[in-house]
Image 1 (cartoon, rainbow, N blue to C red):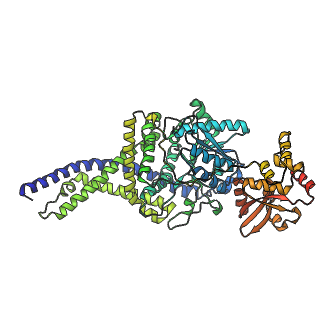
Image 2: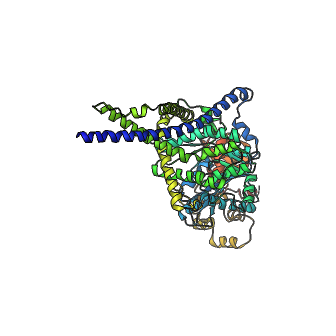
Image 3: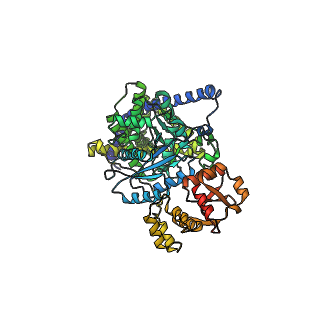
Length: 631
């Protein structure tokens, strides 16, 4: 390199370094201010925790799930918006029926007229689960999640009129949610006193070491729902809805309907859940963030205990959910959150008259700045490392790093920033460790860098959408897709035609019964008229429900099984124990039980349960069968 080129190279690097120094000072000042903001929240949390440990829990015992069973089951409605959710709704309904220790609930799934695949999938679920109902929105999708929920709410009120039922709570869930077994009992316990109940959300962890995209959600939710929301509720009484695991009381929904002309959810917002929490707060409604522990393993999530995990903290009633594992989908999801909270939230909600509430609004909206600042800090770190390498390799002894290190203000700020960074890493490590174990806690500081990159690109995308679309009220539901296996559509064959095909019944007799007025269902009517016997009816019902049919003599059932089976379950569900093999118990019933009922029986007796359709043996027991039906 010539002498002139060498000096030009050196001078260029020096100028770049001077420019970086001013940028670094600016970024360091902002990082310090945001860090002080975070330290204030940290301090509030730890002071509160210490106070409660020594002055509250030293006098009063911790709550446990036994209290939740003291309330009678009130009707609860679960609202699930579904746009292109093939297979996911089936998964949710099955898991809910098998795991929820609650029966008095209905799931209402909002679909769109231009999404036939999801509609067909929901139809299949409805045919298997009588408490699942399909709602078709008035307008083609995707509109917005709020618009879908408004259609669901309207359908729920029509269902109430037709079924003569009145729901006490309205629960928000996504189709991919895994619901805690005692979630509905917790809502049922609190909904009479609280108008909005939010439970924690904990993402599923990926065991792949390099899966930073999915696992950075773990870090953010662990700290946010472990600390930030707790402090927010303590200082303001306001709780932001997470969009899932949120229960609204009937009072809250009625109020929202009145104040918004029948549309409780804001259709101009991409984060209607966040918006509705503030609207209820302004109306003086009572909100709670409920971290409720579960001590009985029967009702706990099957989580393997790991080093560092706090069992009481881990086994809490919460929502488990899969989050995107691809960079593109994570950016798309987070840009929707940023648009809804920062841009639409600022325009629709404005600011509050209470300073402390404005402080938390500022914390919600500062992300658009902190993410960009964090991204700039990462770029600066890269250039500083590059300059250090150039200085170290420079044979002539040029020290470019001195331009940065000789500035006293920058040096002080960098020391302060170092302390702030260590505090952030320690706080995040602590909350991740308590729920996911020490391994994930130690990895979480390294995922902070990747999480900042994801959030920065989400901010850029949100900015770009706002600029290109112009009107933030006209943004469509830019939702994240989820991959789950679909289930086949089941179609029931008419019971009368099947019996004719099996030569159990003459076609002329079937036509005569169908044309005559009757007070019983077709199978019962045929049995009472003596046209079929109990065994034939059992086979027909079993075929229709894809179950096994058995014939039995009631006087020869196993008396020990009957004595051991709880009487209240036998009377409530009209079942009798038939046989037991290990941990599996076969039950005889007259018609197929719903998966919800089977799940309840299984949980109460601690055995796997199989439903059989039973028919009395055709040996002169027609009179007895008639009496049994009338009873």
